Each structure stands twice: as C-alpha cells, then as structure tokens.
Image 1: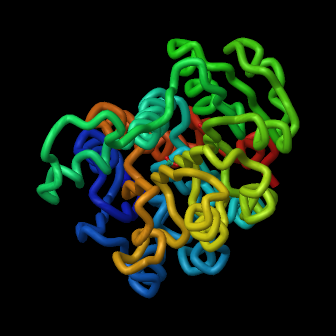
Image 2 (image 1 turned 180 degrees about the vertical axis):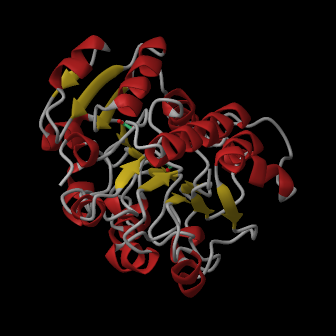
Length: 329
Ligand code: GLV
Ligand code: GLV
C-alpha cells in the first residue's frame, strides 16, 4: 500500500512523530524557527496531510498550493486562528485541533501568572540579581492578596472553567463573562455570570480565555482598561491580539490598571526592544502555558491520531469542521 504523504512543520515530541512516520511518508521541518512561507508553499505540494503549528498561516493559497488531494490539516494546538477553516471546509479538507489534553496545564499556568503578578515574584528575583537586597523590609515589594479577591474570567470554556476551579481553592469570588453564552459551565464551577462591564469594574484579576476571532480581536482596549480597577491585574494566556498592546502599554504606564501577566503577545514573538518590556509592572512569557513534558507529548500523539484518522477517511478524535465528513459534497 502506498503511504500517504504528509508534511510536519516542526519537530514535535517524538511519540507523535513516531506515529506519523509509521503510517505516512513523512517530511519534517527540523529547524527551530517555522518554515518560511515560500518553503511551506513548496513543501506542501502533493501532500495528503499537513501537521501544522500555531506559528504557520494555513490559508486558501496554501491549500491550493498543496493540491486537491489534501485531506487533513492537523493543528498542534487547541487554538486554530492560524487556519482558515472556512477555506478548508469548502475544499473538503478536515481541520483538527488538540483540546482537552492541555486544559489543566494551561489553567495551571494562567494561575501561575496570576500569582506571580499579584505577589511580584519576578520583581523579587530581579531585585536580588541587581544586588539590592540589603535587609528584610516592612514595605518591600508589597503585592495584592489572591485569597478572597474577585477573579473575572472572560470565556468560560474548558480552560476558563479550569481557572474557576483553581480559584475556589483560594476562596475567590469568581465572575465570568462568556461571549458564547456557555452558562451552565460557570454555575458548575461556582462562578457568577455577569456582563463584561460588570466584570471589568468588579474584578481584581481579569483572565482571558476566549479564542481569537474577528469578534474577540482587540476585545480589551483603552475603553475596557478605563473601566477596570486601578489595582486590577490582567492575565492573558489565550491569544495576543485579543488585547490591544498599545492600549495596554498606556494603561500600565498611566496607572489605569496595575499589572499585566501575558503568555501571549501582540505581536508574537515580542521583539526584545518592544515598549511593553520597558515597564516594571508586567510579566511576559514566550507562549508556554501548555508547555509541560506530559502535555506536549499528549498534544503530539493527539495531533498524530487526528492526522492518521483523517487520512484513513475516519472521523478523527477532535475535528474542528466535522461537516466535511458528515456531509461530503
Ligand atoms: C496554544 O496556544 C494552543 O492553542 O494550543
Ligand atoms: C479551550 O480549550 C477552551 O475551551 O478554553
């Protein structure tokens, strides 16, 4: 039997690559940075399946460059804003993602950022490294309490719910706003559904858990920061462009909000000379919320399972556009 041809756009954890290699004729981009656009356009020619990362833009032009035999695009991420799903659906191409396996790991990290910002952990380390630690100080690096504070969750999906469950352990009051109206979800985890303005006005911590879509692009900007408490801390582990970076810079600089802790940025990667990095009241991590050894391996095997099922014409575990198989044209 001829093996299907696939292209994998980066070295993913071995267990996933091994599965792909067993079933497919596999070409892998082995560099640390993503394949340049022209390389990708050339590499996809004639492939049956693509295993892509969130750093790859998978649009109609790329699907057409691949050719009509392309059957499945397996995205190694829960978010799939990098893939033009509508373009894939009209071409009969299945798109898959990796939800579930990274929920708790990502929620752990969002809570890590919340705590690190509230208690100024990174500033503490910088202080010591700078040789400033002379003595114990009564007012040294005073932060904000986490316990009994109000957490506002924007987007009560899997990860938002995970965040709410964690907050219960700290006896926080949890508010949420969900643009997709997933009401029961919040009640299950002891969170109260409110409108966005109420959430912004009442929360000590605002944590973002919506996908990036045209509706959520710059959902948090100057107007929203003005509605937040001057002591508020913003946490973003979803996608950078949900928050307007320029407006965030101004809000942090002018004290409209107190602090931000970001795992995702606009732009991404954030250049080392970006103005956000000049602020003292920010923590930024290089998009690592799902980056635990176990979770990244599970994502790799799930992405491989999705890819292989799609190539066999079977319903994959996590289809984004199952209608491609349910209602083939
Ligand atoms: C990471 O950001 C993902 O969407 O999996
Ligand atoms: C993503 O997995 C979400 O639903 O929060």
